Length: 125
Image 1 (cartoon, rainbow, N blue to C red):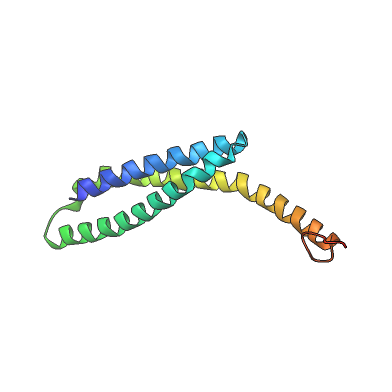
Image 2: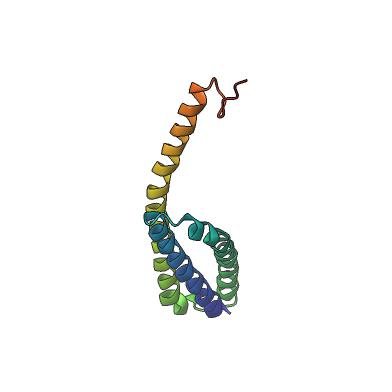
């Protein structure tokens, strides 16, 4: 059961890394629709990984309580940790690209709004 959980989590982390890499490429190529289309899938993968993490902790605790030497899972768990660390780094790279763009759009909207008396759109009659 532990092996299956770890394998599933590795597969999910690998998919999440692929999706984030695709997001980075799509941002660079201004293909935002593809980026948006992956968002639901990435959110679900993150939820699944989070739940699987809880399940894995429970399974490891139960195995340890039943006298199983959980060190036999060390290599698999280390591999999982490497993948999750890579997901974290890729997500940071994605954020470093997206956040400045978000800030730029926020500044543009604020400038337009302030020049129109606090309204985004000026209505004149």
